[in-house]
Length: 155
Image (cartoon, rainbow, N blue to C red; front, side, top):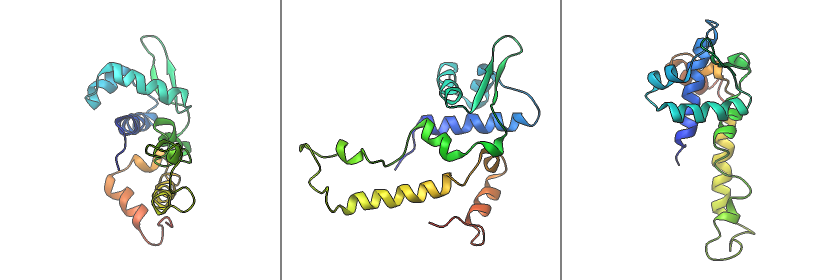
């Protein structure tokens, strides 16, 4: 299972803008491009997706740039991931993976579909309970917080 480059970079851009949020500053496409090592063209495309998704605001001009549309604690990572790439598994999955048949030969009782549903539920349980604020601290803090049995998310 792999996440797309769009999801990876989109989250990275939001983290960068989330850290800038508390200083009251925005970031420009060239600044993000340089700090993340990604072409300005690709940065612009992803920032547009995030802006249209309601996570960012942009301002034109020499003092312009991109800022979060709301505080990091109000930006749900599940919403971001669905905007950037959709779900790993959705109801349309079986229609697109039916082989040469017009419908899946296992549509009535499918253990494979059950596996993908379990994985999707586990992913949803994690990302729907994370905000951008959770991602702004150190990695160890996030992992410890989300894997502590007293605070863990039920899978």
